[in-house]
Length: 83
Image 1 (tube, rainbow, N blue to C red):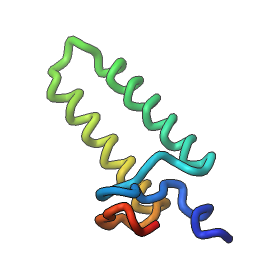
Image 2 (cartoon, rainbow, N blue to C red):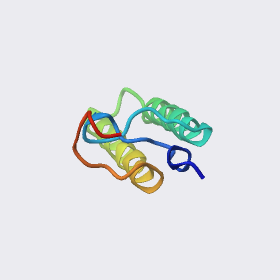
Image 3 (cartoon, one colour):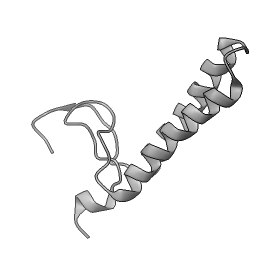
């Protein structure tokens, strides 16, 4: 299997972290994550404390980061020359 095909989320070329997904599975996760965040914020409602909404988004972001760690290229600082 090609090195790039086994990772749903490739490492960014510059800096630390992951870039856009390169597989359909990564795109499904990304779209589902955005949908869950927007749906969750809508269900929480605007009348509740903004702190609850921020806590929800932070929690959902932790879930996405965990999936990126699990199915993405190992993160490390990159200067652009190595790919």
